[in-house]
Length: 536
Image (cartoon, rainbow, N blue to C red; front, side, top):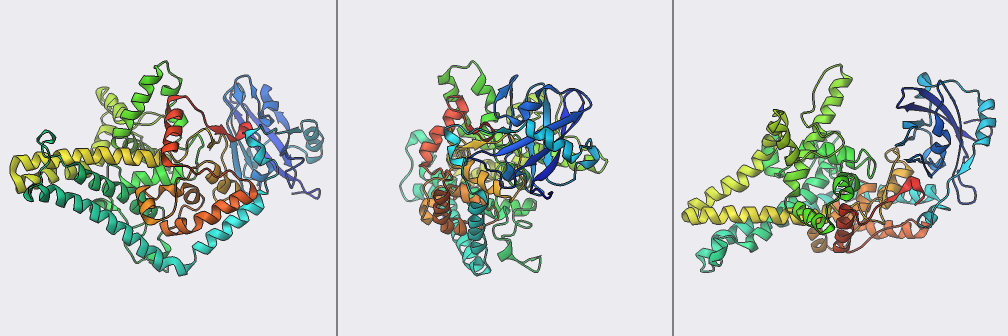
């Protein structure tokens, strides 16, 4: 900060040719001038870097999409990265402090000021992005933080945990009720039709609902830390529903949240990467990028839709569980490198997802480590569902009972894949949802804004409705405030929506089935998402 009220930041830009360049940016304190945000740039460098001007433009130049960083993202301590694809910079990091000073080329402030003014450009918003012109981001974020503070008050702790236990009870009733029907209906004289071979669709539906609930409601919100404050005293964990205790280790995984995914791997992929880098290149759940091969290929459109339908039947074990393992091992490799050690990531798909197919292909090439990790991850859930339960069926009704339990478990797994695909994959995709080519600082005003415009809610209100939506119908509120309880999201949602309407911030809320249509169309390449840096 200098007497004129400008913020000054150093920017280090590393090109693919190896040159290091330094830019000085000054942004107006308020950052708005006639509905536009201003960014002024000058540069000195060791080598000539042609697309300097493109870094301050929201236009495509030489095949590169450039990002313009708004003044609201240049607050002290905020970190913004703009990614280019062309001959220019491969990454640019702008910091509101002096963290990059040791790598910067010194620029005199007075000389930089004159040069910056000559390069001043204004970011233009297109018709979709007109809502951004006069947004009072600070005022909007202040009201959101006030709502967050209110619902994190200790007075809610007891009610929040009581509500969680109620939802867990519902899940248990569904699961064990399904098993009871599977055993009891034939004994009571109500066998399934012969062509089903004893498979009970009603029991499968109840069991699948319970499996989904254990993940999306109990495991999800507990492992986010939504009940940490209520389940600890003076830093000591006092209850089961604390993220440092819940589902940790083999026994607790089996009793708390047993699914295809390893909870520790899910924590890295979801809590650390997806949640705090929503819609960015580093988001492992960015659908538009993950489906790029299908979107951009020559496959007929009918075949594309069929592939998406097939994925919905198996996505949890085929895609999601292996990809969470990949992210877990990638994190371990990064941590080892920081400590001067070596820990190789056995999953070799780079920025693209790891799946059962890619792991199997690797195994045929002699790369067996990923296969071993995947088998260890799958084993508890697979052994319970497709070995232990059929053994129980055999004990009750012999071979026919074993077949009935096995077939019902298979159907329950397919159903829970479909259910979870509909309520999970739809959360952050559509032609009215934003993705981002830049990073932002967690818990900043921009972070809260991105949580809203990068997410979609479904129908909200009422425990039964929310239970069937896996409590994922509050994605906007959840991504703003990840470490809160289910009951808090339910109670705050009308107020969050009202504040967004007051300030003109888009708040997407539609039927889950309309959002499913958006998801599928983006996956096959029929629709595309909005891009923040493009001025949408």
